[in-house]
Length: 82
Image (cartoon, rainbow, N blue to C red; front, side, top):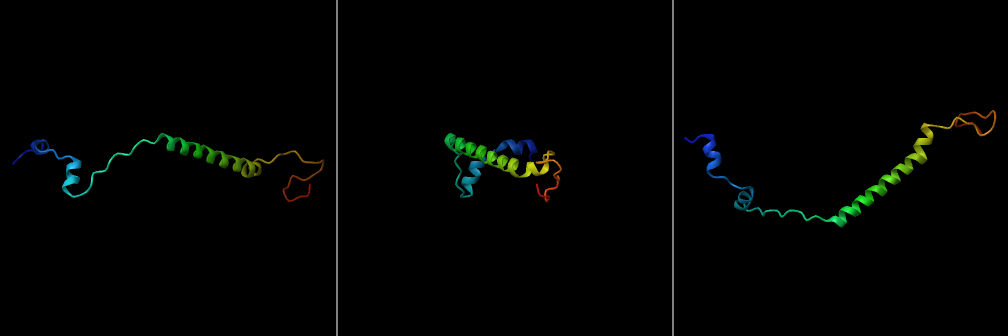
């Protein structure tokens, strides 16, 4: 009986050889596409800018309201007339 070391080094089978033996086509590596990458990065930055603009226009003012009233004696409640 062969030892583990002898069995592992005796007949190394490559992954592509195994795929060819099973009838599966070997996949070609993907091509780098720098223009597509740049376009996606620009689109991502624009999307982040839109999300930040929406946050600072809607959520931020509600979370940190201004303490200064518009006129003397006005209530700081959001439902009170100003």
